[in-house]
Length: 92
Image 1 (spheres, rainbow, N blue to C red):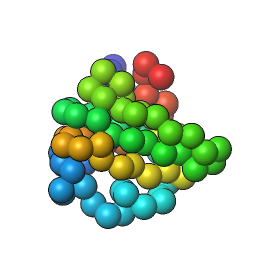
Image 2 (cartoon, one colour):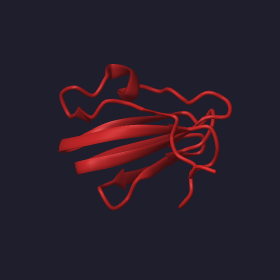
Image 3 (cartoon, rainbow, N blue to C red):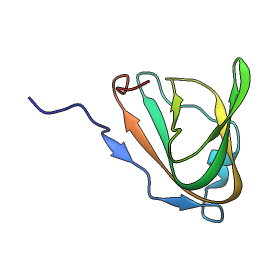
Image 4 (cartoon, one colour):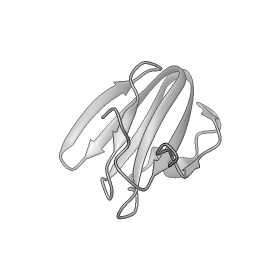
């Protein structure tokens, strides 16, 4: 039996290539979890329901639950990637 893992990952984005769609309100589909992994620098993750903010860094990834509205904002120079899971990812 294989270890659980993400079924898809985005390309690595930096502060310039981060798509506008990720900077605006959006959510994952039902049954899809997202793990935001910061490779370099920092990224602000804003949850919208309920409203809260967290600063993500290489040692502090962010979890997006299915259908959870959110958006991200670069904090200066950064690199990040999102892994998509079809089950709750381990470690959260």
